[in-house]
Image 1: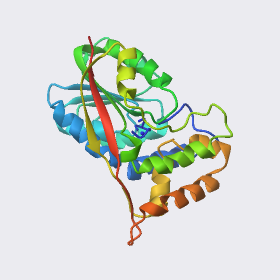
Image 2 (image 1 turned 45 degrees about the vertical axis):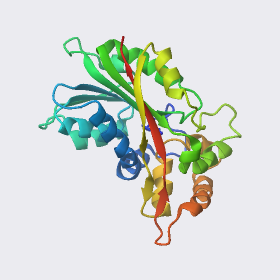
Image 3 (image 1 turned 60 degrees about the horizontal axis):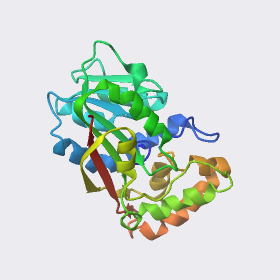
Length: 280
């Protein structure tokens, strides 16, 4: 929690609801929130020795920070996302006509981006954070479409929130669930379960091959930046639809008060978990 970890990469659930500006949210995600998951991306890349020879497929790649990190290490990267605004920002970063080996595709499914002449991928990343939303049906479908594009033995990386007691942001995200209650059945944040990632991997027919935890603190220059960053994850979409943007902002600002420092900055320690699984 994109998600998306966060969602966006971390959580987008279909099209944006009314009263959410997709362009503004994409920019807030790219400029404020996406970097919060940088330690996760760096840890995964180091553990899997991402570099020349890596062919990476990024699912729901968002504005492309994780792809950029891999591409600068020499990996050939392909990012797939259905959101026009996010991909536009990814293209600014990666410049498909530039020196990096990068390809960006707007599509609802990775299968729509398949090319008969493209070699199999050696690494597939799904940084949509498992546990960010109430169900993982979208991720199950995305993996089912992506795995035929991966080589045998390729690594597939899933990510999710760590234990709620180790994620300060979980207390803030409960606001999203509370405000969305009038919309029965709305997909919103829920606390992570211990075996979330393994369950997704097993449903996809993958073989778990290691996991780890990474500290990903959320730090913001001020409360306004924190609110904009958190809303950009998509985890408050249902809350906005059930109430309005002003009410969500008010509730969020109040919930952030315990994490404000004397200088006005906001700091919330979090732990994210990742799972490496293999294509049989």
